[in-house]
Structures are given as structure tokens and as C-alpha cells.
Amino acid sequence: MIVYTLGDNEELPQEVDLIELRPDRTSLTHLNCPYLLTNQPPTQDANYCDVPYPSPIGQLKKEFPLVKWVYSFHGTYLSFQKTAELIGEMFKERPEIVKCCFDTLKITDFLELIPLFEKYREQLVLFGKGEESQATRLLSYCLGAPWIYTSKEGFHGQIPLKDLSHIYYIQRVSRNTKIFALIKGKESPPSIGYRLYNPLFFEKGIDALYINIVIDHDALKTVMEHPLFSGFSITMPFKKQAFEYAKLHDENALICQTINTYYQGVGYNTDVEILKQIPFEGKKVGILGGGGVSKAFTNKLKGSCDLKVYMRNPKKRIEFESQTSVPCLCIDNIDEDLDILIDTLPIQWVTKNLKKTTQVLDMKVDFNQAYSSQINFIDGLDAFKAQGQKQLQIFFSYEFFL
Image (cartoon, rainbow, N blue to C red; front, side, top):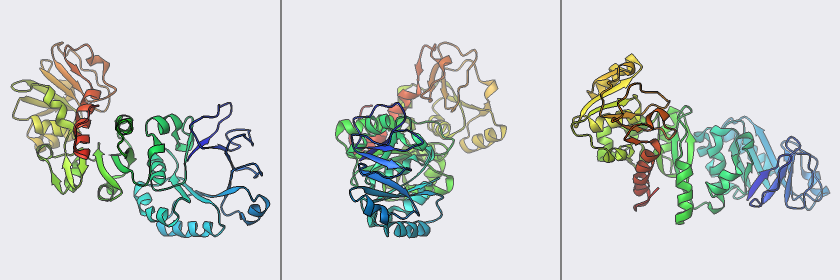
């Protein structure tokens, strides 16, 4: 079920199953459709009432025999053991549903809690608040939670209804759905993968879900090896570290020494797919940036063209040049006579005095507008589609067109 947290002056959405009424969002306390009362006194007409733990609900069940009860905990996540004990205590009150909403919940902690969804099948809703914990809301629903919360604008980190319904197509998801994930860091740039992949899965009738998960470095190996996930996209800053954890590698991964795709123990680099669209042989080429994509492209292209890499940090320039054996210069000294420029920087950086005939590949989806006047220009959306089509082919063994 989809539970919609209603705000003041909002129309009732048609594509949801239950409306949540809570006094910090709306003054309404009654509706003529199925509704849930939260943080307010129960009524006989309510379909569900949410009561905060540890308030007892035994007497309420006698007074309101037709109401179904949600027993909810809001607070800090401590450990698997403490959570298991807490949920066990909460179910002693015999509610229909137990809800645990943690202030924050790391993906590795959530993965440890998975056995609880099997123990309390279709009775447990468990997730973390905030945007960084959004994946736990989706995973909770995939694992059999009776419902998922949503709202118009994403209250407390809820996934907005328009995304839940028309990007994730959440109503198709079940415990049998294959889960693919983008592994990203807290500072990673926004990704469009979930906006392209999930509608494609829906259109093609593929029982799969693609989500973003935010992790710390020490969680990477645990997440990559967890059986819940069928495969991964990997973005900065984890591409090199993921390469080291992968059991096997494809040819491009071995050349690039980084991976952006991991499937069934094998690391792949599909970032380089876009390079097939550009003739590099004998050309003067410059790459901006020193991250995972830059290193992959540098290792792939060196030896086939006159290649230089440009970045700001002096220490990183020395390290990068030592690792790749490619000249690495200050970004302020970029050669104005380049035939090809590849911008892998995560931020906008205007290249001054670049000749009009220089072919530019900007890896940002939100590309630098200064490049749009170039005679030959490829933006980050085209680059993403090229790598994404190859990635999906690896995951599902047939061709896709994004």
C-alpha cells in the first residue's frame, strides 16, 4: 500500500491507498476515504491509528474495536540486538503493524535487520529519516513492509509521490523483485540513472528496481557482497576501491584500473563506451579532472594520442602522473590548441580561449554551457546513455536503448 501524508490545502491523490492525517501537517481529522490518524486521539471512523511506543494500546483496542493499530517508535538506532528486542516488546501489544522510524539508518545497519522482515512478515515498517536514508524506505517495501509513506514534496525524507508512482512505479514491486543499486558517497554528484532505468523496467515488464544508496568507504565491501543486491553501478569516490574488491575484471576494467559496474563477482568499466564515438588516433587530447572517470579515460587512451591531464591540486597531479605515466599539468595552463577536450570535473569550469573546432566531451549531465557553442560537442547525458546501455546489457544479457 501507499500511504500519503496529507498537507493543508492539498487535493486527495487518486493513486494512493491510505491518507495519513497528522496535526503538524493538516487540521483535518476525518475523511470519507481510508485514512490513518497519527499523533492525535483515535476515532471510531479511522481505518488505522498510530500510537507512539511505549504508550499501551490494549485499552484503546477495547474502546475502538474496528480500528487497526500501528505501534510506532521514533528515535536513535543502537544495534541489531536492541532493535530486535524493541520490536519484540512492541508486538506484545498485538498491533497490526509495528513501525520503526530511526533518526538515521546506515545501509549496512539496515542490511543486518533484514531477518526481522521475515520474522514479522507483512507487519513491519522500518526505515531511516532523511534523504540519505531514502533507500531504506524502498528496501523496506521490497522486503514485505505493508506500506510505504509518501507525500507531495518529500516530508522528512519521504520519496515524493510523483517519483514513487511514475519513476519507481512502486506498485509493481514485490519480494521477488531484483534490486540493483548505485553506490555513491555523501558528496557524489546527483545521478539520473534511477530516473531512466526504472521507467524502462516498467515499460519492458522487467521485475527489477534500481535505487541509490549512500555509503561510507568502510561499508563498500559489505554492500558489494550482500546477496540482497543483484548488481551495482558505482560512482565517485568508490571506483578504484571497488576495482580492488572485485573478484574478476573485464578487459576495460583491467586497462582503466577502475570499475563503475559490478555484477556476479565481475567488475566492468562501461564509462569508456562513449569514447567509441570519438576518433582519438593521433589527436592532441586534454582531460580535465583527476577522479575515477579521468583515470579510466587516461588509462584507456594513453598510447593512442598526444594526451595530457589537467587538474588543480599539485599533490594529486604528482600522484596521478606517477600512477598513469601521463603528463599531468595545472588546469590554468591548459593547451588552447587541443583537438579534443574531455571534462570530467564535477563542477562547472569555463575553458577560456578554446578554439571552436575543439571537440568537447563534458561528462556532466548538467553540462557547462560554455561548451555548447563548440562545433562538436557531446554532453553528459549522451555519455551516461552510452555507459548505461552497456551496463544494462551486462545485467540482463540483451540490448537496451536509452
